[in-house]
Structures are given as structure tokens and as C-alpha cells.
Length: 359
Image (cartoon, rainbow, N blue to C red; front, side, top):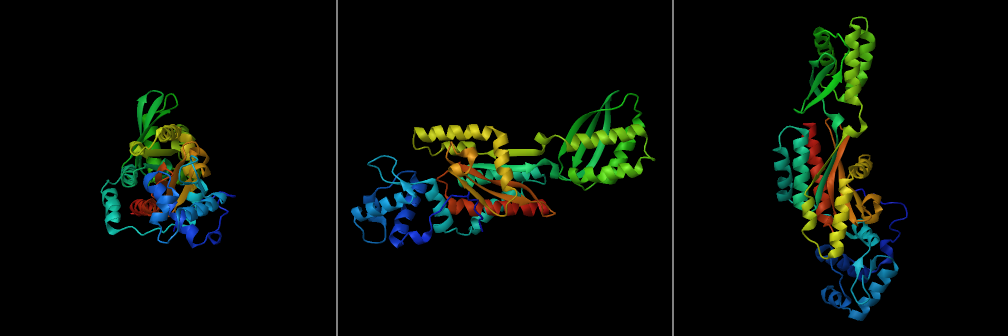
């Protein structure tokens, strides 16, 4: 179900290198870390593993796991914690991803479906929900230009400026101010509105631009020169603006402050907040996942953006009615996320969003 985005040269450890004892002990080290954030020692492990092993034998196994790069000791006398490589290995090779319960499915589907008809409403609700259910920060990256146009109108404001009102099928309204030629008659604005509405209703802005460029060519003789200018200016203003075509929604950052264990944790969360503020970096990261099928998982420094804060990102693309990927949704949180629970939640939420956007 989850296609994991593993950088080249990452987990070179294979399951075959670990015998049953090593797997069991490694699994317990990781599960203890995910539950408490604390290192676990050989004495405790020897009590909780289902096989009879002395603390000394457990220590030997931990030493082997350390040689493989799967665990490390944060202090000389402390127990062990999983490394990022260890977490990646655990997620890929040992973790059982359960299916979501009906309760979880309803908890996601109900509120998202009730969020109204606008795309933004659905995405806001979905990211907020994911954040609440996973105790991490919910993130959504959506492409603004995927909305479908319902109606366009030009309204004169001043002799040389007009307002373009763009109404989308999902109810969003966007206004742009356009310069218009001196002496432009009001009839030219009406003609431009009529021409645009006849050609682009039900199309996305990207589709509309291509369609209009063709339509303008063939209608040049029928349209007044000034009207053509207004239409061309309208097309340029909607489909330009690279920075404007991506929308980043981050919800529930406060969740990341709930479970801090130490001063280092606080520092990491502060760094993560800084990284989330630099939207361009987050947009680039999430944008890469748009080309993927299924859930993507980045752990710690596998992801350049969040390497400082040692965070994990679990994201999945969602699609529109025509089956095209139009954004990604997921969570960003500490590396000790409950992966087995979060991965199916992100996956299911992306499917719910896809279903609603397709409907």
C-alpha cells in the first residue's frame, strides 16, 4: 500500500541479517521509542521480550544492532534508541500496517464530507482532522489553477482599470485588477465577458488558456481590436504568477508542543516551525510527492528540508474528477510518529478527498 520514498544508499540492511532474537529486540527498541521517546536498556528488554535471555545476551544483540547502524546509545550508560536508518528499516521491513477501523474511517469521512462544497473547505477540514487524529501538524499542498471556471465578468473601475471577477464551480471567487486601453467603451467589456463565458465554462484555467488562444485566433475578424486586448490581458493575468498557483495549508502546529521530552525536543520543534514558515521549501518537498503513487514517507535527514529538526513527513497525493493528481495531503511531526496508525490514515484521507473532489 505505501510506496516508500527511499533515497539511494539508504537502508542496506536486509531482514536476512537479523535472526529472530535480533528482530524481536530491535522491534522492542523501536516500539519503546515510538511510545515514550526514551532509550530502553538491556535489563528492561530482557523482562519484556517473549524469549528467555539474560541482560548480558541482550546487550550483545544490541551491540550487533549498533554495528549494523540500526540503533545507537545517546549516552554511555543509557539504553539504545533507533537511528534514522533503523526507523526506515523498521517501517519498510518489520512494521505491520493495520487497516483502519470503521470508527476511524467515519471520523475522517463524516466531517470532511460535511465541510461544504468548496475545495478549500474540504482541504482545511481534512488537514485539521489529520492533525487532530495523529497529534502532528496536518499539511496540504494544493494547486489553485485546478479549479474549474463557472463565470467571468469585467467591471470598469476607472477609465484605465477594470476588475475581473472569476467565479469557480466550487464557489470560490477571485478578483483581479486589469489595466484597460484608454477610451475602451463599456460595450467592449461586455463583449469580452460574453466571449470568455462562451469558451471557458467548466474548464480549468490551464485548459481555458489553451482554448482561448485558439479561439482568439479564429475570432480575430469578429472581435474589436480593443476587446481582443482585454481578453488577452485577462488570460495573461490568470495563468501567470508562478508563486500564486500553489496553496499551502498547515494545521495543528501546536500539537507538536504537546509531548516534548527535553530541551533538545523544544529546539527541534522550534526549527521545524521555522522550516514550515519557509513555505517555498515545504512546497518543493510536497511537490515532489505529487509525482508519486500512494503514500510517501520521509524520515529525518532523508528529507533535506527537515533534516535539522529530525522530523518525519508522511504524505499522499489526491486527484480531481479527471483522475489527475492535483495536490498532496499528510502530516509532519517528530520521527517518533505512530507510523502503523498514521500511514493508513493519510492514505485513507487522500482517498476521501479524491472522492469528494471527483464527485
